[in-house]
Image 1: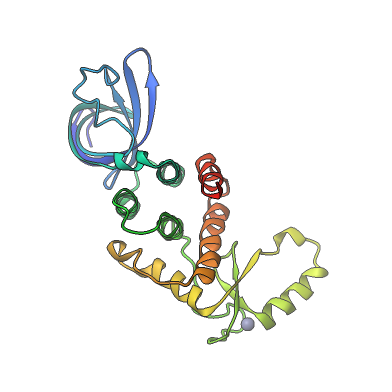
Image 2: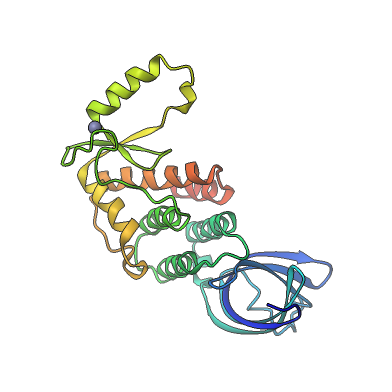
Length: 265
Ligand SMILES: [Zn+2]
C-alpha cells in the first residue's frame, strides 16, 4: 500500500487514550490490518463527529489516512456499539477483560478475522444477555487460544494414546492430556529430574469437560456458546479455560482480577 492512501475498514475500538487537550489515540481491531493505532484529531470535543465512533466497545466503519506507521481518522460511520454492558459492573469488567486480551494477542499487519468475530460475538452475547457471563468468558478464553494458534489437543492421552478413560489430566503448558497411568509414571520420572520447573501443571478432567473443550475449539463462532455442562464439570471447564489462556499469554490481567473479585461479592 502506498503511503497517504485512504483506506476504508471496519473495526472495533479496543483501547482509547487521551492525547493533548482534545485528541485521542485509539486501538482498533480490524480483520484486514490486525490491531491498528488511529490518531483522532479533536475526538474529545463534545462537538466532534467522531465522539461515539472513538469510544471503547464501538464498532464502526472508518475511512483512514495512513502516514508512515500511523493512521489518521478521516470519517467514521457507527455500525454497532456494546455500551449496554456498562449497565452491570461485572459485565463491564468482563468486556474490558476481552479488550485487554485482544490488545495483548493481536498485532498490526496480521489478519485477525477470527479474533474480530470472536470479540464481536462475545460482546454481543454479553450485552444481549444471551448466555451467562461465566459461560461467555470461558468460551472466549479458550477460543482466543485457538485463534493464537495454541488450541488444545484433547483427543487422547498424548503419551500412550489411550481413549475412553473416565478421567484425564489436562496439561496447562502443552494444551494436551495424560491418562492417570502416564501422569503417575511421568511424575515419578520428574522426581529425579534436575529441571523440576519444566514439569507441567495438570488439572483433572472428566469426559464431558473434554467434549466441551473440543466443542469450543472447533465450533463455528456463531455457535460458540451452545454447549451444555452441569455445574460441577462447568466449574472445572471454566478453571481450565482461564488458566490455560493465562499460561499461554504469560501474564495476568487487571480487569480479570477485578471481574473475579466482583463476582465473589
Ligand atoms: Zn497414557
